Image 1 (tube, one colour):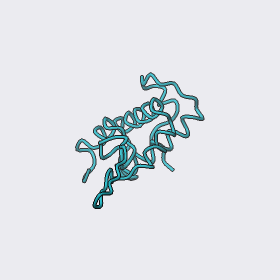
Image 2 (cartoon, helix red, strand yellow):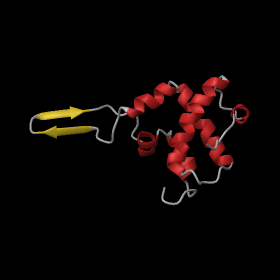
Image 3 (cartoon, one colour):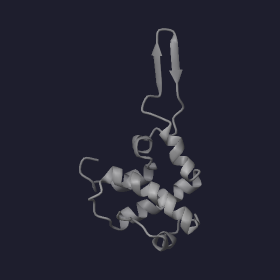
Image 4 (cartoon, one colour):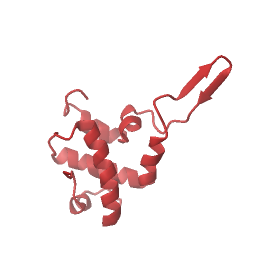
Length: 120
């Protein structure tokens, strides 16, 4: 499996979020899975993608780590439904399509999607 970012590369980014190497391995797995789902596994890994991965990891730390991804997985695209007098609504973690579908924070999706990937 190709890696976007190593632990030492993450430490070179001034994210303000320290992390142990074992935590990094777990959160980078989640971040890389989300990023590869969004940009495709064959996309070139350049400095922008590395920075996006560092931001994704840092933001996920700030939002509960693995729990951030677990919270996203319980929400679907349907936020409310009604049938006659019956109505049901769910709270949504984010109104950003990329965040709800891929788990990417909006700035990360913007970095990865601004003309870099065809079809995004």
